[in-house]
Image (cartoon, rainbow, N blue to C red; front, side, top):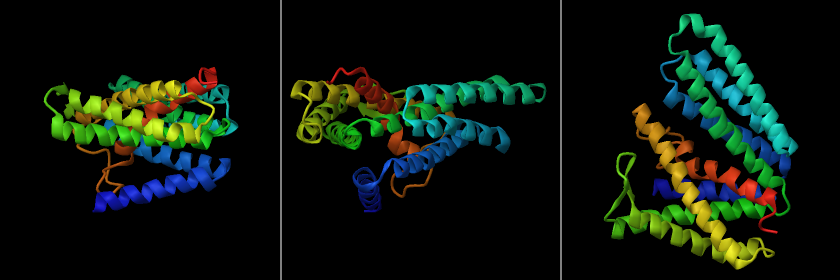
Length: 265
């Protein structure tokens, strides 16, 4: 019941933000969400580093999200480059005293890219024509995929997908998840984005569902390498925020790139 209540609350809050919130409100919420994601990421991967090191990665990871307000990939890329340069300077400052500075550098870069840059693309989606509808479409596809994979794996799962990374995932669950994502995308896609053809919606739904699975597996690797079950305890019944947004994080730049390319026009 707690898990259901949390899910309903988050769903309604997200729906209200997309339908009623303006660009500024969306950007502020995105900044707050990215800060929480970076906090969870640093707590998992940089737990043996100093609070100063974790704060540096968190703050630098927010630079691309902050620049996303201007609505261009150039602004995000410029902010990301600045974040990398400042991270290098931070590494230089601690290197004489830390033999594992390379680990901080690599994990810091990954956090800036995976959370900072990728989440910033949600702002690019929001700024395109019909952007709120596209974000809602992405949300529905990922929720349908997760639900289909869970129930499909529970009832039909026989063959493990990646047992060393995520023992609960099965090939049958993946197949059911993609089918559910395609069904969800087909039901809402033409309504939310009436100018897009049905074949394009079906292909896009499939691509996003598969990308979401990759995102989920990436987070599983992070958690297993860090020795934790959940990324945090922020969401009752769900774990951390990273646990809920791992798929969408990777899907955001994919969808943003497709929309920017004009392939769906």
